Amino acid sequence: ADNDPEYLSAWNASAETLGWSIPARVPGDLISDLHRAGKVGNPLVEVNWLKDSALWHEHVWTYTTRFTVADPEVARTLVFDGVKMGAEIVLNGQRLGSAVDQYLRYSFEVQGVVKQGENTLEVVFNSSSMVDG
Image (cartoon, rainbow, N blue to C red; front, top):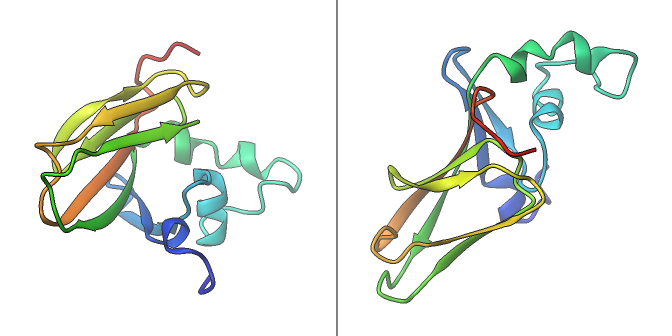
């Protein structure tokens, strides 16, 4: 929605195998993003969430956002709270690590990876990833 804070609306979810790229919300979830984009029926009605489950089980989904940094020399830490397990964290094309347990906090030092100007953060969800949960 147009009134969303930037951190909610500045994300995009894409599945290369489907050729889809949709607006996404963070915090949020893929099923709700797919519903808002008109790709699936209301997940709270009957078995819509089950009928369309191949969309999230059989494809790699990448959540992407861009942000600007004025001074890349300032020490920075990227923190994730409650990120879905199986997520690979990528900043400016460099893998920072993975989240394998959705109940843990993940912190990544990004000095040397973050750059002055525009930066691209990707959170890649692959259902074939090994997880602890």
